[in-house]
Length: 496
View 1 (cartoon, rainbow, N blue to C red):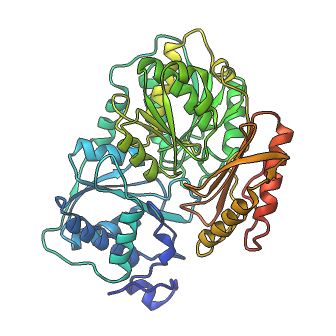
View 2: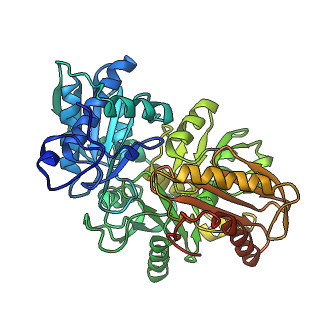
View 3: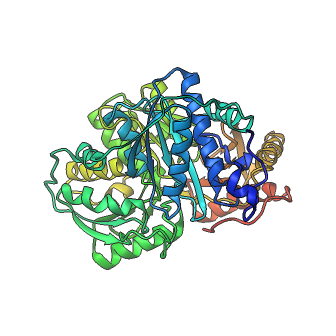
């Protein structure tokens, strides 16, 4: 049967019939508020549709499934698995997990497909599924569009042969794969910040296995998230990490999001280093080990990748690409890049460093190895070696899921019309890159970006100035003035 598009809790139909708000099918994964936008029969329908898509794609009907640490995630997962088994799929349940642990399970269990029940960094009340067929890749827009059609049009096909299997030991194998026999040769004290999310069950153990002195920060599992929502792109979490570094005298802090595929960094001076600049630090180090490497950076990231003298000296090249974990994974894979870096804190470390998927724990391990290779330097020293630029955090003004893409199209058209002779902060616009929203390039190397969020009802705004905080504010104000010509754009989620 076709799912009902309007979700109505506390009704007879809500307990019986699949209800799914169509906007939950996003560019590269699925996310809904539960139970306001999807019910359990709706999640079962999603599983049946995903299983049907597996058969349609011609892959063996075996899938690894995990769930994050939220109080409703197990119920969501069992509904999803029921649907998968209805479609004739052999489900291998790895239990509570990080998203990258589920991706690892595809390799470890030789499973053709993966489905991870998680709301990622979204606040409590959200749920969703990250899924993929071709490791280490996850669904992109084409795959999500087809899945949406199968589910919402009632095209799912029931098949015999469905099976459930609980699989133990994946967590231990995942940590062994991350750390191996590596041990630190320098003394290192690190704050591990988990925001009481799933990464609390992983981060401290991974760091201690390497011989790191760990300062735990909100590493008690608590799915109410009593301190803050675990999101290392949010200034609230970064500020808390900074306070922990200053109080403990740690060498730096590492912070992980709700499903552990992202990592944030604060240095030994309490300075919050946005992930795109941490990426430059890592790219510098990796390009010494692997000359002439290719890197990928998302369009929200700093322009330093294109101008950094160390990267140039080491023959490195950087490709700027669409924001989003699926887009970035695919670009890294297709280019044969060594790594990809996203301002949100997703890092995609490919062979021989990693397996190509985004893993916050892998980043933690590699940052500790980087520090071990630079025993005479602190994290603040490495930060100061970079060109100084002034960058906003990721700013997300509200715009509904049903309106955000049309709204963005109008904003981009206005910016393009403004380009001939136009300025931001008195600086001439030299180019507008429209591969993902609009990245407005300025004559002094500064830039301003506006795009639509792929997973929440928001636009996304990031600006950078190579000259001063005052110029940064002026660039933002001029961009925001154009954005504000659209009356349906609401307040920003945070300031700077």
